[in-house]
Length: 261
Image (cartoon, rainbow, N blue to C red; front, top):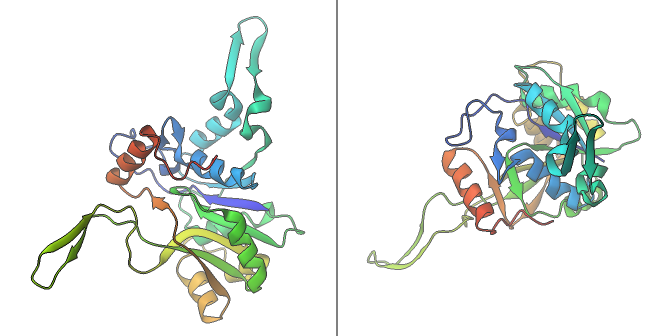
């Protein structure tokens, strides 16, 4: 099954992350956040990726065309070239990564439409996610859920991360508890991990302004073709400098829940 990752948006200039890198290439613990997403999915057995590129696609291509040299030991011999060491121990050696140019100004729905040719005709389903959200979700369970309900689309519903300390208050205003939680206890939001059947392409158009999260998903919901896999575990999206710093801290303190491998 193909895992499609939306990586084409503009640079975010996240504080401390460096200039105008595309957000998915922002490093967490020395590796791009998109690598963390792929590494997690690969742990569950999903190793065939399609990256939808746009802004600074050259950065993605330089990294992934040299992926094994980026993650493994390398010897450079001026006379005999480059030798890779212990590649058999690298999970990445089994990855298949398609780097697809999906337009500089394309929106998410159009990007997915443009990679239809990279989904083999005998693949009845494929997955789509974004290049900035990490999770400890066992994605096999989402795929099983999708196959069981028989609809065209599945979105993973998650709890939104709490941005502030959560207060437990009494009637008189007394604070009974203060909790700096990673997850809020409120409603569900889209975690951006989708599984789609091929029929979803009929809901997409060649309009570069097509936003996946608007007309296509809204029509799928109206048609009764969209189901939610509800997940209460860890999910975190790197939207701003505070998010970036938090993920860096978790990784540095060896407390990164998304590190399932």
